Length: 268
Image (tube, rainbow, N blue to C red):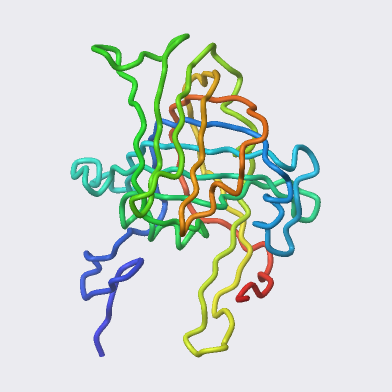
């Protein structure tokens, strides 16, 4: 009988075709974050049982653009950049489970297939999108990391623009926001193959960084617009009140999570 290898599909005799390697996964990235407040009812409708709204500032949202380089322990992807570099944009809210506050990614778009595969494993609801953001650079016309620097960011999916932002840095900050500052509470879902079979995989999990390092965060102001699209619902998290905007460079290691509880049935 043949033995097939690989952490993820496709599994082969050698395992070399696997879409993603086994964790740990290492990330280096530039993050642009825009925080604002929406109607808490719009956050609540995205929280399946047993999750509840966060007790403090329940309508807070973070919309984050990230320009990543990522790799496995071997670091070999860094010398084959098509396997290492990708961009993403994602919306994060906060929630509560058993009295503890968690962050939760409710929408996310990426531009590479391996990033989608990692998201399926981690419980992120990833979709393909078109994501762009201004990159800082110490020479030429690109913005420096300094007061008055301006960064643009755009998000589109299926030929429709979903969001755009212009961020103007003002001053160094103590952090890069509070909405995405907790462990993540995500669901891992997989429908049963038989019709009416519900969910074959249904888990509420906690994940977070195994290690984290970061540069000096900067805060500033943002001009943010959200747009409607026929197959996207980001615009339902409508902007009611701006909070702040941030820029930060980070390094993160992800190396698994833990099961919080079997999830409630959400097949409806």
